[in-house]
Image 1 (cartoon, rainbow, N blue to C red):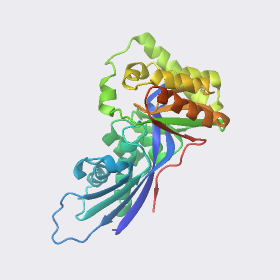
Image 2 (cartoon, rainbow, N blue to C red):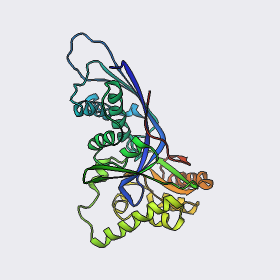
Image 3 (cartoon, helix red, strand yellow):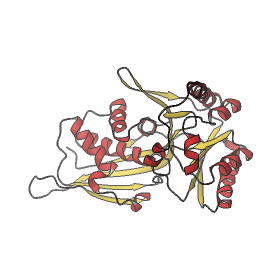
Length: 308
């Protein structure tokens, strides 16, 4: 057993228009977790000590309910091991919380990956992604956090299937992050239980357009793919200024723009040369709606988690 381990995990943008609950892209905003074991008198396992920095400072989640600890504990259970006593988790994150950029998925992956290294568990790759998906509920944020890049993730007959997706070198992902939150639970509650068959047919065609559009940087396909019919129509009312911000992105040169995850962050896809203009346009549009926002862009998807 090692005395300590450090894990670095990227954020992610998921759903990506027509890629609802299955397509995600790793984002270069990082969560860094260091786990140490402190010697304590006796062997009883008490609650872990969690020290939070960066965007995690605002969290008031009890330690034993934090995704960092839940990921660690789930990895122990999966391997038939007890959670060790004296657990100290120190986390620093750049990933905005409850903004649709995969903060909870990154935390779950970080905790589980740290347990795997610290306790020498056989847990990596798809097995790690499956475990974190059980915590998160769906794999679209988890898969890019584990593998990096752009990923397609779905449940197959024998478990989770994760496949890399090609992202054309000309594309940039531009994010506008507003200063309000949308809880995932509330966003999920906004979705209907069923959809008309014809709407499902349109969604299937748009998801195919997304994969092909990403691979070839095809403007027409990306415009169609980012005009989602499965979740955005039901969630847009939760995001003040959504229509104005996405319209501003398109006018500034984006092929399209949509919710990142369940929002409220908006992500636009555009030629890399237009990334700064698209980001500025989205921030200005939100400012006109009395919403403060920050912007950043990624010319390439980030890599997956790393341990040291």
